[in-house]
Image (tube, rainbow, N blue to C red):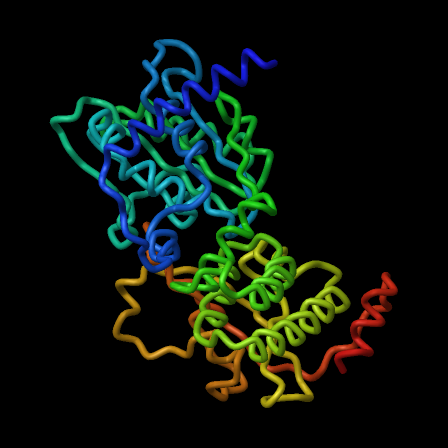
Length: 372
């Protein structure tokens, strides 16, 4: 052990001499959030795995000439974002002459239709080779017969010969369509999500310099429970007012909302993203419609470029009470600053106050009595 320590100390001395030869860097303002808001976070290993699959030498056998990688994960976990970053990688673009995207609307019982308004051609470069990459985005599952028709359609002459397919879905059943092991995407581990959330929430302020806010922020992060979208929505609200009282009041209301969502629907609000349609409940500021619940009935995404000039209520303003919403309207929940630059829009209406389910946990009852 002593010999090992002496070796380590000796190597460290050489490192110190090397490091001291470089000029010192002056202390700069805390700006990690600027970097995180403009790049994909926490998916680098998955990115490299997908790229490795695409760059592998295409075999002449197996799947009748087409290699298939399924990517599976719940809604709003980042499947589209991951695929978009893969398609923008220069290594991938040098390998494929065409990258074609098929949305659920362009799949008609297995007949692949290139709709003119869906921006299906993501990339085209005839000098890159004579093979194409097809991206198929599903919402749920697909039957075997439809999949066989898709493969038959992609072997047609309407585009360059397809050699690779990436298919994304929330259903685990599409794993059977793959010629390689499916890539499973899940929400970030607690430690990684905490780093992301506190960085977004504190902005240019160093969390280590605000221990009281950091403590409140950790409780809020636990309630957000790993949701990428909510980390940006809630984080931006907190960053707008670095007051301990504001953060504490926000924490109390978020606790009440989360508990009420559990008792209305029996699930965490994050799990409501598993489906695009179907009623879920969102938090409405107590100053508005105190005798009603705000219920969403559709959550969808659109290209941000088409919404730039459209006036729309922001969900963050609704949550903190800056605007009084109508009884039924659309609100912009979040606008992503990284590819594919989606804007997430929620349609909602104010309903009569819903009866609660019987509490399954003592903690829920005590929390509800405390905050009502």
